[in-house]
Amino acid sequence: MASSILSDCSSACLLPLRRALLPPWAPRLRPCPALAHPRRLLVAARPQLLPRPRRMDSAPAAIASSADSATVSADAPAKVIDGKLVAKQVREEIAVEVTRMKDAIGIVPGLVVILVGSRKDSQTYVRNKKKACEAVGIKSYEVNLPEDSSEEEVIKHIASFNSDPSVHGILVQLPLPRHMNDETILNAVSIEKDVDGFHPLNIGRLAMQGRDPFFVPCTPKGCMELLHRYGVEIKGKRAVVIGRSNIVGMPAALLLQKANATVSIVHSQTKNPEKITRQADIVIAAVGVANLVRENWIKPGATIIDVGINPVDDPESPRCYRLVGDVCYEEASKVAGAITPVPGGVGPMTIAMLLSNTLEAAKRIHKFK
Ligand code: NAP
Image 1 (cartoon, protein in one colour):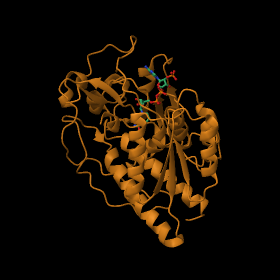
Image 2 (tube, protein in one colour):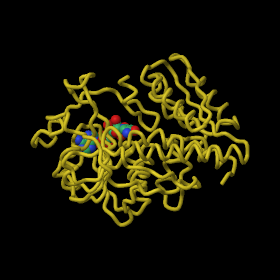
Image 3 (cartoon, protein in one colour):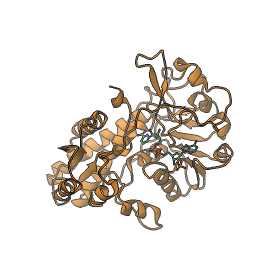
């Protein structure tokens, strides 16, 4: 059950249940109220900011939404960016498009997920992806290979899906067994079917002026979708991305830059991270350190997208832990203009963006507008 709560990295990376200890040099201010009072973190809803409907590529008109399910902090002025609600909207739009495509040209988008080994958490992620595909009408195929498979065997499967016209997206569930080289395996996926967006050519195109990738990695794409749907202006704004991983931080910074923000990247070696972050109108935090970002890191009115998913001890919870973000929600929501909760913010967007990438792949391959 625990693993079903933990969202994985773009669809591909494992999130181990790690101890959420602040590093020794992390700011030692007051304890984050969310840690001190776990139950105070989220209270039930009053309508907040209504997501601004936006067409996704050639998706149909956005489905009317209700912000009734928004979750807000008791005394927080910050608007809550409701990823659960937006992800639902996105899935509904995708379902409409899948049907339209099937009716018009008889093609159903197909996603194959390759799982090597039998890690329970990876199995759960794969199962969740399969369910999400089925719910919107995308065909999903699953290949389960034994832990001791060779790289050649995995690549042979990838090669056969690269040339299979019923498969439009290929995803290799990470982590792979230790004896395999991720790079070798991921590079074997055709860039036109690389729905995770991890192929170096896709990342390279994302980084270049005047080029567009075939696919954008799912989690950073989900962050951008939240900003767009909530009408957050990006052009000309100062943005800070905390974290520079290949799957979240780095592509998120590239996307913000493509959207004409002035972007700084804060990482583990950055001096005065709070001073730099405090200058930002938009913050994307993708670190993996529970409640690292405190009130004094945040410019009043800033928009905060919290990608982090960190388990922390919570004796009051039936599982004895709960999930918090990289941002101390209770403090940040007093200062920020808008903020994503954890859970219920970026997490639900990742699989929704995988479905979106798969639909996009099928449309591109079949030249369907
Ligand atoms: P990662 O590969 O471990 O990268 C973490 C990044 O944070 C690194 O660039 C690291 O800097 C930086 N960092 C570490 N400690 C720092 C500190 N104290 N101050 C500033 N920067 C620091 O992690 P990831 O895969 O990007 O994931 C980040 C978080 O997002 C995790 O909590 C993960 O669970 C979550 N996540 C959520 C989703 C979702 O769907 N919601 C998807 C993916 C990931 P260096 O480069 O200098 O080491």
